[in-house]
Length: 227
Length: 227
Image (cartoon, rainbow over all chains, first blue to last red; front, side):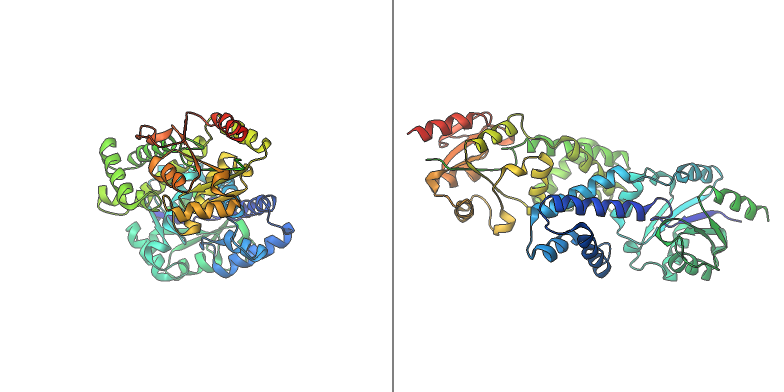
């Protein structure tokens, strides 16, 4: 009997890859306009390397980009990039077309809903609130809060504990085979992979279900709860 | 001969006190709506004390407020406050009505313009860019960058050096007697006090000039440069 669903956030409930990609590109364009003397594609290459080396939650990507290009700190250019990134975030952050409708139906079915996500707590909450979907979730669990992220089984176990449910009562929905599907399956949680975002072409012979959009979850749960 | 003008930023070029006051109040209202269980005026009192104790550039005012009220960290409520504060900032940050017109005239008169401000470099630049007035300034000088702020005379001396001007060639425009007018006068810089913002009622027998809005600067400079 399925009693609850745990969701990954980025690229599962909204199009994170596309949004971040656009926001970074627009930020770099505005920085070039503000005096960052470099070709756009060249700047993107340097920025991508900084993000790869320092991780996506490192707070000084634009500082490092400016230093790499100009050999010095230029607060005007950095502030321009930050403002543009933020403006794009406010404009573009919205759920996948089917997300809200599906979350409403799942709540109406009496299911407990949670988010289990890697990331900084306040940053992930900010996304949920800006997306307008935070009221649907009984639990929001972040790797920062727990101290350990995906694919660590302890993190998923902690998620189950917070939901107060057993593995066989829970579905985990995520977009990545390595970080979402494999650890869920190892614990006996039913795994649903959403084929969206930058990991949609990952090889996958393991997910219990594959879906293109979240509405398909409804039938999966009805089917499972008939048994 | 006046060749340049150094401006304070907050409450001199835009209405900082009013904007910050509205942003904080709206943020607290949204946090109460998100579950911060306290009366509004009581919450504002606690927040004011936190800001007074920790300073306005301490990054965790809302975290501390939530902890003080609920006895625990609640990321949903904190993120709600941050989002509201930011939304109000984007909506309300604009120059005083006469600022842009005056800056254009001063540039047309061939004057060098600078900002000499206490605060974090990126944060002050972000304000200048959002206000749309950053292209007018030849120099933007912050206390964070210099390592020492107002009313230290060294900071004003550094400002003169960056402007490449002598004290008698410069006017300093600010809203505070203690932090703006007194140090400027000590160095022989002509001091103009703008009677705006939360310090407008400060006792003042010392400013060389007092103005209600920035356009009055034009006549002061014309008068001084006739001599």
